[in-house]
Length: 447
Image (cartoon, rainbow, N blue to C red):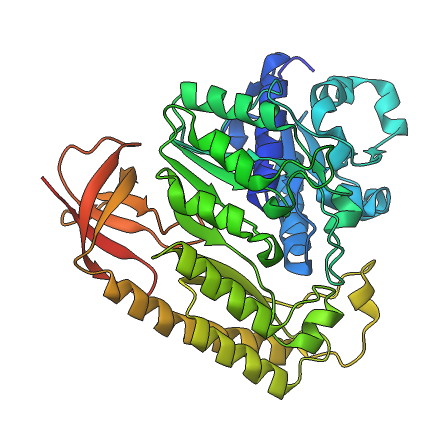
């Protein structure tokens, strides 16, 4: 191919986004041009998610859209990478003949070589390459950030060893594999030198960091080292398993000024029998104690959680217990997923299934309950002082800037609208909260 312009579509979670950034940088290093405009591309790369059915459907829809574009332009190639080909392998070749090449998650580091071979005649003999998911990036692995430079995700591990009965991730991504602590710190320093001010820690289970390594380094120690890096203003923790919220970790978060008083801690459910079926082996009592301990150790901490509704065996009584717990715990942010029956998981064979209609109704009920809680919490913030990370401009004359406070992670939580003048994108501005909605805040710059 004479033209080497690649348009990358990244789907799914921040962990997948990091993979897309790695592939973009490796391609750029090999002479490809990364374009944000599909009109300019002669290679379309779709990095897919296959975690649950809606994610698979989104991936397929995006591939089909790309295929339509390919048909309308001569010489365009379509490459599909990530979780979908890793999970389904060559089965996709029959279903999606428009795709020129399928690459599993283990091929992330080899992306340039595979795209180089697209023009070779022998490529037609092998359309799918999906080996063992062994790729693990390091500090020397290049990345082309797709986020604003002031914010970057830092992936500290790959894979997962928890084996929750509903989850296919260990099959797709393999067992948990932690990066070396010095290696992670080296990448963080490089990001800081390039202008990153917020590091968002991500992995399938961040609190499992180091368990697979000699000497058992842990997340608390890693956060200590990251917090010492010059230029890093915020460190934000995502995907923290409640079992991993140790006193040491909580104390580290509480005592480091640049570690956000914010923890994303998915609980999934609270009914003991449901949790046992999920292979999470906790109880509502342990969750309650963990949340109380967290709030005691970190006053004012913002807690985000994720819930699964409609899991097999979730009777109305069990669902009522979940609702009661949510009302009692009053999470600052909460996301809800309807249970997705995934082939290859233990839960796929469980009886007592819930209808899709009922799942949707339960999800809607929880979101309505959470909207009330979120509104009340946000209203209580009016009059308080917060640092706001300015992320862009807004069309509103009254609030010409948008940003986030320490309590808000990008994409998944609300935003803060800011009244101020001549505010620099990527700067931290001291503001007073003046109003709120269920999910967003309004603030005024303090002179």
